[in-house]
Image (cartoon, rainbow, N blue to C red; front, side, top):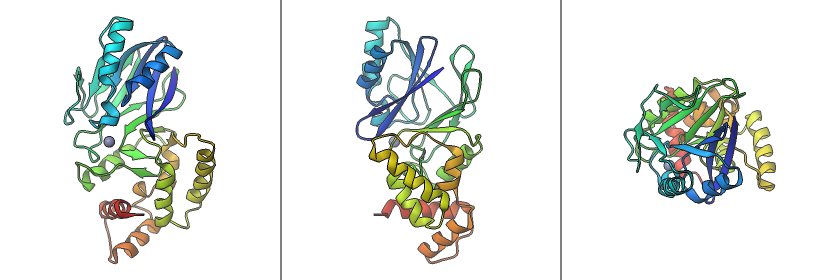
Length: 266
Ligand SMILES: [Zn+2]
């Protein structure tokens, strides 16, 4: 199997999954960049996987439907969540559901509300042809950060991130934006003494200086550097208590204050 990461707009990443001349695309906010990719490396586009309803994730669906009808002579499967409105959706998927995208290749659906009410993620486990598992998590988990709470609650987002933490450490976190440097600046404010974080920040800066992607990272790295996955760490708790000027006990409360702090962080 092959995996492509296609930049779009100013900082989005669209993801393609390909096998034996067939392909799927995750969150095509821009249809044209996908059409270009399909012309450059021809494959039959079988369908679209959508994580949530924001325009930069769904904006290209119409163009892709039309192009595939005209050039490949079939209709796309369009898979998406229940609680977000997705145009042209042909199949609604729920938490724990398994989706077969190619013969013998199954994605696991995880409901991860918080950024939006219906946000879902797709997990591709390690199987023949997939050396490293992959998580397509849209705007839920980012390298060094997490999505804003536009529709859901902090409690929902905390539970969603805890759910993603159960996946294997080697999992590649295929998120939808290149927000890493800004996220790491905030992470460093929370944990100025985290050595893994300072090392990764240097590396990420080097990558960005030469216009390279910092994404995907791994879940294992995120557990070491991402403050939103580190509510159980004493360093994060002490920092959050200093910021909030009060004692904070539960992981969920620490997460909630971390998210609020990030929202106003300059
Ligand atoms: Zn979004």
